[in-house]
Image (cartoon, rainbow, N blue to C red):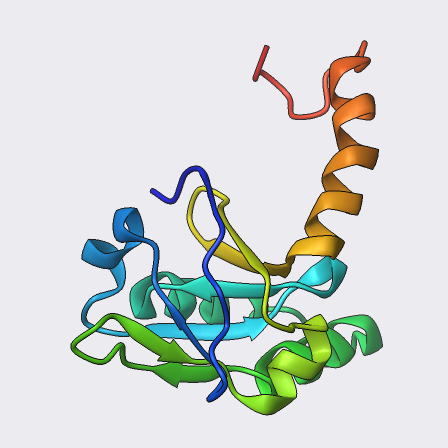
Length: 143
């Protein structure tokens, strides 16, 4: 499970060093994909395969499903960390997420997410207020 928030830097070659807490889960490889809210999702290969199996069960007659599959899978990239646990983020994904030097990598349960730090800070500030004032069940059975 991926938990917490970490602030690695993107180097000049478009690489980041994986947070130490995530290395065990990602040491043998990972899949990067476009995430919603303009971040990058980071999956283990097994979790990514599960997601692909789910989304490809959508009916081919659904335009929304076809569009989602195209955008999600066309930007996906399987990567392997080097000996220093650095991972190269492909240029198209860096551009999609607006990544520059300062990054925030968060744990989101079954995946990690890579955010531009300014984008994460803005997102988090907006969501924190909504989170603390939630009066109804957002996820059934959670609280």
